[in-house]
Amino acid sequence: MQELKFPPIPPGTKRLKTLIIRMVFFIMGRGLQSASMHDPDVKRELASIPEGFRIQMRVSPCGAAMTLLKSDAGLRYLGGGPEDAELTISFKNTESAFMVLTAQIGTPQGFAEHRISVAGILAYAMVFTRCVNILMGHLFPSFINRRIMKRLPPMPLRKQWVRIKIYALGVPFGK
Image (tube, rainbow, N blue to C red; front, side, top):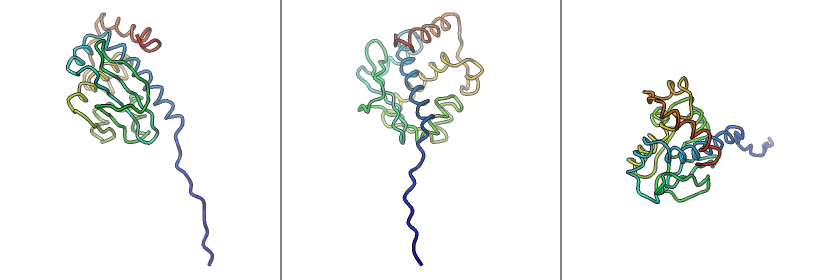
């Protein structure tokens, strides 16, 4: 009997989800850069991280990444290049990154379900995670934040002003 030979079928690439992940990384990177300049809570959290420290978030199979550098002014968004980083937070796959970054599940749930792994100093990873949660409190409305956070951060008038600065200056211009 003749053996049939079929060409290998490559797996799908999930182009739309990868594009959305890249956009969220851009918005998150610019938002963290702005929040580190304007939000006193983020400034206080980042005070323990040394200058010149690089933090990278990446998605393993699709290659989307976001790199941040801690400087004297706060965090600086460097883009998505393959940088050497002292702290790397990796999503296991595109599906996991999409769920966490689009606020379908929270960051703590992503860590608990082993969707996210950390390589580097765990204390700095916790600091960075708290900064990301503060940023999510600014970027997302409260009905979304209730689903992904255990406790909503208070939003007095001063915080609302910081939120406006992040939306108006931070995301479009990185200021």
